[in-house]
Length: 111
Image (cartoon, rainbow, N blue to C red; front, side, top):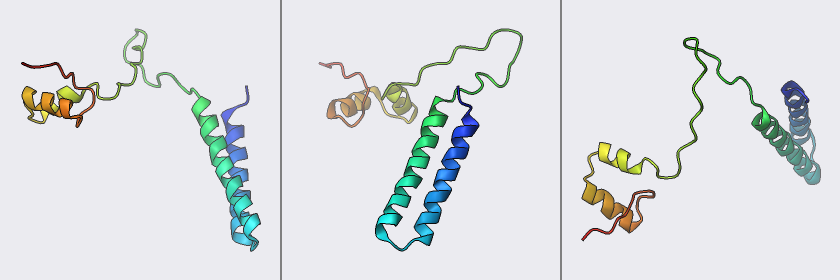
């Protein structure tokens, strides 16, 4: 596996070449190609850093294994709790859910 540093150095070199092309050339096509090189350099950096896993847990508390990471919350998963903490009543939260103003609120039919 290629180390992350190699990708970051390559990305920096490509970005520097693109920047030099933008500022030193007067031809529009060359300037646009230089901008494309800069964008490709940034894209390369995003892909390289996105695949980098790094350290799992840099700090350990105690002798036991580190806790398992939790998944990211889904869209609107904590909407009811947040609205309740802001002072909305259950009826107001239900109304906002029925009107579509809030995503993730359980909109049970109330009689």
